[in-house]
Length: 392
Image 1: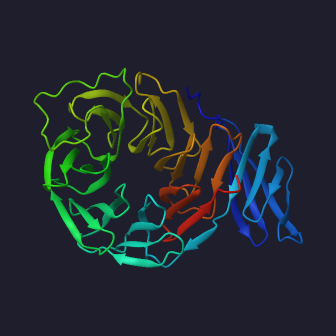
Image 2: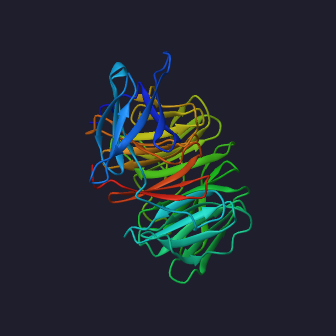
Image 3: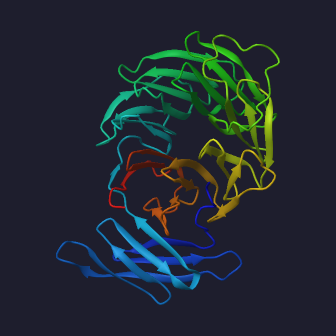
């Protein structure tokens, strides 16, 4: 039973000042921010930096790619991790979304330069250009096979692509506004999309047809997630028998992160509302931690951890900064979150410190993807960063 994640009552942040120096700050709600600095005094024979912290901060383990810093006054520790490698040449402008294939070999990403590309995850080498959307492509993801890509664009179209030859094999039309997020049901016979038009729709890939509107919210739906519901949850019953083309919708719940400050749960097969939670601001993203526990992030920087069986009050609210929470991803026994101020952090049950993925600086980190012990982030600065967690 998940207890709340290690409390983030205080947040340590690190900003590069100039060569060999960095700013440190420790912020606790309702208290004055503590400021300090780090100074590099030299390198060991193994090439590991010798780093000293100013008063109030303590330097722990240091490697070539990471540094553990504590603020004893606030009883908080953070390990700052530098990217293992960066890919600067995939896109010319901001990268708005990315995903990594199930085998870890390929990446797919979309950009405000109007392109969507498939690339080698190991070195960033471009393999395919996926052309066919009009205007910007907002979201992309691999099917579980790793051979097919699903994308949604400002042109209100949902498309399925072959990763092998870049052909667009299916185009779905029906939304009246830009598509903001997608989800895949089981192996991908059915897929889901949500849009600025306030609807979430279920699609049949084999027949290129819309199987139904799962929800009509009257407000843009910024993010969705589909998961298997806890057995004790009443998902409602369908008003009419589901189409035989619906594959794998039974027992599933769809989360809707809505612009009108509401997080909604809907029975995927029944189309019936399961819960409605009102947050502090527009919800941008949501995800499942398990069949019982979910996370959702808001525009004003809150991450809500909820139990789907009782959403009257959150299990906890994590707040590191007032910057928008842009993406959430389950990771091992915890999660990864990215925000609009460049912070990207990992919280895990078994770690007594937060892991901070550095170098985005103040540019929003729009999306995070993982494969085994590698984390990929995409950012407004147009760079894909790959972090290696094998040393943890």
